Length: 154
Figure (cartoon, rainbow, N blue to C red):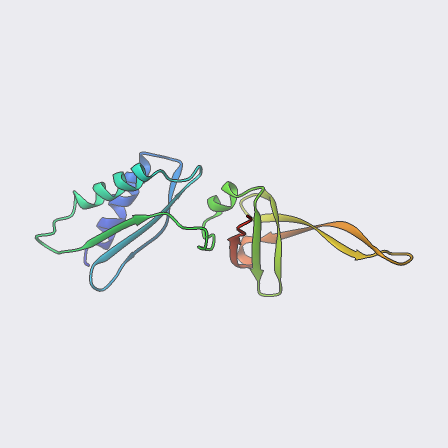
């Protein structure tokens, strides 16, 4: 589809009307299937997906080039991609993969450069027999994160 920049502009135009929404991904396949993935600081109501979809659909001409359009939100299995997604998941448990290790902990802090995870673990006592529960903290820069997913807890 030659209109990929037009599609992006139309999506951005629709997102600008609700500052709590942001674009995660936009793809257009060879057969003109447009897929838009949006998220929001407080989630994304269905009505907003419909509004974004209509803004794109009503401003593209199917007579010139046919297309299909899907506007959706990331499900829980999607890895986090944008810094804003981390902010909305503070106090949730994340699984984080870096090139060196895999960590699981509660996201307790987020800024523009890094995140902070906290978790409890059982370790041998420094003196004597048995184990003691200790609280661990890890500070991870965004650039070091290979994959981050919210853990589903039932």
